[in-house]
Image (cartoon, rainbow over all chains, first blue to last red; front, side):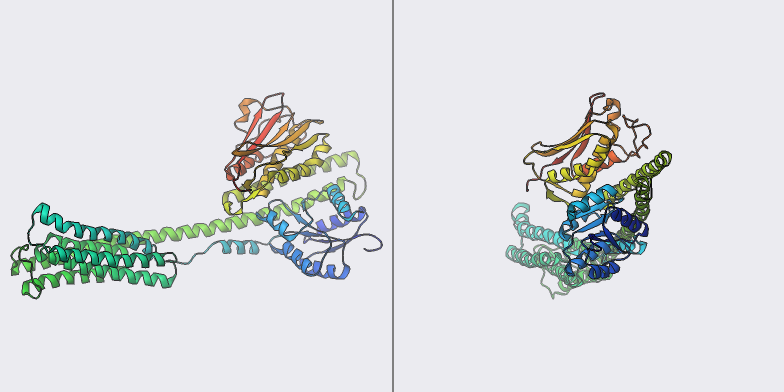
Length: 125
Length: 462
C-alpha cells in the first residue's frame, strides 16, 4: 500500500506502455510503481512490497519476463502476478503459464476497462 | 523489444548436427544386411553340396567338409549379427564406428577364408565359383573406405593366387575328381584374368561408390545449410513481427486511452478520427498475429507440443475473451457445453486462436442485437465445436472459397465503415484444424445465419 492505495508494480521495457499503464491504473485509484528492466523490477519489488505485479513477457531477452516471475517467487512474493503478452509470443506459452502459477495474462494491447476490472476483481478494491 | 541477436541465438540452437563420414554412415545397417546374405550363402553351401552330388551327379564332393564350412560360416555370422545389433543402436558415436569398421574387416576376412576353403572343396582352380572373389571385392568397395576396399581386393586376390599356386605346386592337395587338368598355361591365365578382373571391378566399383558418397555428402551438407537458413529466417521473421507488433500495440493502447478521455474529453470529430485510426491499427495487429501463427504452423514441429485436453475450458476462455466486444455491439454471446466431452490431443494456444478467429468474424458480421452461440458436441470419433450466429448468412457459391488464404468475400453484413480484414483468419482456422488432423468448415444459408465448425479427432486417453 502507498498513501492508502493498493500499490501495483509494472515492469515493461516499453516506456510509452509503462506511462499508459500508470495513467490508467492511477485513474482507477491505484498507486503505481514502474520498472524498465527485470533487474529494476526485482529491486523495486524488494523495496516497495507491491500488492499486484504486471510483467511484460518478452523484454530485451526472450525469457526476461518468465525469469523475473521465477525470481519473484524465490524472493518470497505472494502478490498476484499478471503477464503482458502479445498473442503468439511463444508456442509453448500456455503450458509455461500454468507452471509459473500466474494469476492471469493480459493480451497486448491492453484494454483499459479489462485491465481495471481484472485488477479490481483480484484485489477486491 | 526483442533483439535480433537473441532471436538468432534460438536459430543456432535449433541447427547443427555432428558431421558423419559418409562411408561409415549407416555401416551398421549395411553390415546387418550383408550378414543376412551370409546366412543365405551358408545355406547355399549346405544344400548345394548334396544337390550337386545327388541331383546334378557331380562325383567326389566332400559333403562333410562342405557342411562343416557352412556351419562354421553360419556360427561366425551369428556372432557378427549379435555384435552389429548391439553397436548399431548408437552407431553415430566414434567408438562404435571404429568397432563396426573392425567387424566389417573381420567379416570380409571370414568370407575370404570360407570362400577359399569352399572353392578348394568344389574344384579348386578350375571351379567357376572363383568368380565369387569378385563379388567380395565389390562388397568391400561398397562397405568400406576406398583404401580399405583396395586392400581387401588385394587380400582376396592373394587368397585366390595362394589356392591356385598351392594346388599347382602340390602344397594344397587337389580334389582330383572335380578339377580340370592344371598346367602352367591355365595357372597363368587364371591368375592374369582374375587379377585384371579384380583390379577393374574394384576401381570401377570404388569410383562409382566414391561419386555416390560425394553426392550424398553434398546433399547432406545442402540439407544442413537449408535447415540453418530456415531456422535463421524463422527467427528473423519472429523478431521482425514481434518488433513491429509491439510498438503498434502500444500505439493502439495510447489511442484507446486518448479516445477514452485519459487526457481529457475529445470532441466528437476528434474521437471519430482517433477511433478510426485505432480500428485500422487493430486490423494491422490482426494481420501480424495471423502471419505469426501461419509462420509457426509452417515451421514448428507441433506433434511434440500436443497434449490431451478438455476443450470445454478452452471454449469458455475464448468466449470470455470476446464478451466485451459482443456487448459493445449489443449481441448475446454464450457457450453451450455438455457435462462431459471426450479429450482431444491439441495445442491450447492454437485452438484458442482458431476459436478467436471464428468469434471475431461472428461478432463482426452479425448485426447489433444478434445472437452468437458456441457449442461443443461429442461426435464419437471426433469432437465438434461450432460457432453459430444469426447473421446474414453466406451464399453457397462463396462458401467453398472462404477458407483459402487472403480470400475476402463481400461485406457479409459487416458495417460499411468497418475496415475489411486481410482474409487470413479462416485459412488460419483451417490450417490449425489440419495440424490437429481435423477439419474446419461452414454450414450457412443466406438469411438464416452461419455455423462455422471445427472437428477434431477424439483422443483415446483423457
